[in-house]
Length: 81
Image (cartoon, rainbow, N blue to C red; front, top):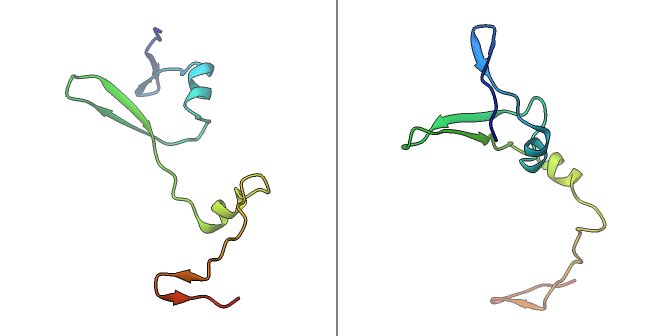
């Protein structure tokens, strides 16, 4: 796919087509890391998010929650329940 480099203020920019945005799970405001590889190609990578415990808990649903499983013995320890 070909895109056109456009001038935006003192910078240059491209528009990312919707189907690529969806495939890469991007959204407006998402931070990207831009770099150049050894072949001279531009590389865009989504910046990893620093999730909080609240963010992780928010993602728990009845569909992805596992049942609690306790064993009588784990190593040399015994659990009482």
